[in-house]
Every structure is written in structure tokens, then in C-alpha cells.
Length: 438
Image (cartoon, rainbow, N blue to C red; front, side, top):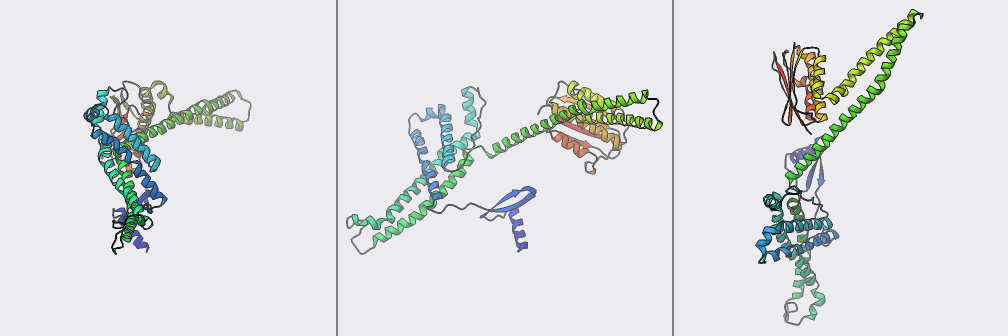
């Protein structure tokens, strides 16, 4: 049984899905089967709501019939059709939201505010959303409404014919309902009415379901537009997270610089003063003071490196050029620096560029066995291009845990790219491209 279930799940993952199951992807690439919603039972409350949704769509066809038969139709098409179609789409969305339980998002404007009306009309005529709306209002909507009217009339006829036993005696003899012969016409009409009472609500439910799907596809944003908006929202939220993380690093840097570092400096000064002024203490006590003084100085040096690694003050005060000059000066091997920046960039981008260069130089000093490094930082329009070249042994592989994966992730946090060229024997070239603005 378990093997059969696994085989069925594998077939469903490959596309052989059973029509009664809908597969929903969950975290960790897991799937679970969810029964697809069944159509309402005829003459149930849900079916009555579906019939009300279909019936509410009938009035929307009347304005279109008036326009198609009006002598001023072409003038209307050229001047007022965009306003009319937009209002009709909003009314249809309200119908589905109030009666169908379907919230269809509004369409975004096809032209920015303040655009002259000829340009707005041209943009509206060339937008793909316009043709989707017209397709619904002129083709899909009227066709479904016609079917809905037939189904509603079928419901009424079914009620009328199924009750012919109760009112058929009012008709004159010889009519179709009350024939004069031996044919049980009343039973025939009752059977027809019962069939209509089952078929007409069933048809109404199907029409309502098709209408929902058509409205979702034609009156709302397209799938491509939804994905584009989703990507934009994710990019904006990602930029907010990156900015928040950068602001948090700055706060920690300020707290360490103004709090713990100042206390350690004061402690080191007091210990140094005690080391120089106290001459009559035992040698053991003096050795304790000396050790404490040296430990305090080492702690200050480590704390300064930590603060500089969180967010260097020179980067915020003087910009990326000065910060990179400080990195090159502190590097354990010669660095030839070439920086050409036209203007200041976003603070988050400057921080990413600073840490990428700092970590790359640390990797070169640790793994490359290089004698020198060439570092060029150029601002090319909206892109910041960083090229780090060393004359080391080469063979850098991001999969071996040399920190290159972290560099690539740091660059990708601001939609940047990082490429590595490192043949055996060198040289190794790391190229980073970052957007100047987020």
C-alpha cells in the first residue's frame, strides 16, 4: 500500500494528476493532496447564491446592446469608451466581490498621472489589459449571460411544469396541458419539469464557475503583471531588510565605540598610570598590573577591529574612496588601488562594496600566496564595477569553503553579481558589479 501511494505521488508530481486532486507545494518540496471543491448540490443554498451571481450579470449586457444599436456608437468608441469600459469593469468586480466571494485586484494605470488625454487614449488602446477587458465585456460576458438567461428560464419553466398537476385542471380541455384523449400529458409535463429542475440549477452552477475564472483572467491583472508586481514588492522588502540590517550594524558600532571602547580606554589609562607611578608595590602585584594593562590594550585593538568590521566610521564620513584606501594601507601585501567615483552611492551599496573588498583581500592574503594585488573600483553609469586581481597560485574554488560563496551572497543581497576567473597557476580575477542605487 505504501509503495502504491509513493508511485501515485511520483506520477502526480510528473503531471499525471487525477482530476479530483489538487497538489499544493509546501516547504521542503513536500506535497499534500487537497480535494478539489465540489460543485454545490442543485437547489441548495450555495447553488442559489451561484444563480444570484449569474442573474446579477444580466443588467451589464443592456448598456452594450444599447451602444451597439446606437447611431453615435463610433463617436462613443473614440472618446468615451475607455471611461465606460473602466466603469463597467469596476462594477463587475463589485459584483463578484459581493455575490461571488471573489476579490479581483484593480488594474494599474496604463499611463502615469498628468499624461495628456491623447497619449492616455493611445496607451489605453495599445495596452493588453484593454483587450482582455473588451474580450470579457463583448464576448465572454454576453455569451455567459445568454446561457444564464436560458438556465434561469429553465428554472422557472421547471417550477411551472413540475406543478402542472396542481393547476392543470384550470386549463381548457383539448389544450397541450389538458388533452382530451387518453394520453397522460400531465405526467409528461411533470417529468419534463422535474428534469429541468435538476438540469437548470446544474447549468447555473457551471456558468457561475466559468464566469469566475473568466473574470479572474480577463478583468484582473495578468499573470505576468502579478509576477512583476510580486518581484517589485519582494525587491522593495529585501531592500528594506538590507537597510535595516545596515542601520543595526551602525547602531552596534556606535554603542561599542561610545560605550565599551571608551571604558576600556579609560581602564587602560588607569592601569598604565598605576604601572608608572606605583613603585613600592611587591613584584607579584606589579606583574599583575602589567599583565592587566597589556590585556586591556589588546582588548582595545580587537574591539577597534570589530568596530571597523561592523561599519567603519570613515565610510560614512568620507565615502568609499577613503575607506578603500584604508583597507589597502592595512593589507599585509602591496595593493595598487585605482578608484574612480563620480558621486556617492547608496549607503548600503557602499557598505557591501567595502566588505566585499575587505573579505576578498583577506582571502588573497590567506590562500593565494600572492605578492601583490591590483584593485580597481570604477563607477560606470548606474553600475559600480570592482575588479580584484592577484598574481597568486590560482585555482580558487567557491565549493572549497574559501569565503567566495559568502562574497557572492553579499553581492547578491543588493542585486549584484560576482564572477571568478582563477585558472591553476593564476592569476585570479574577481569581478563584482553592484547597482549604485537600490
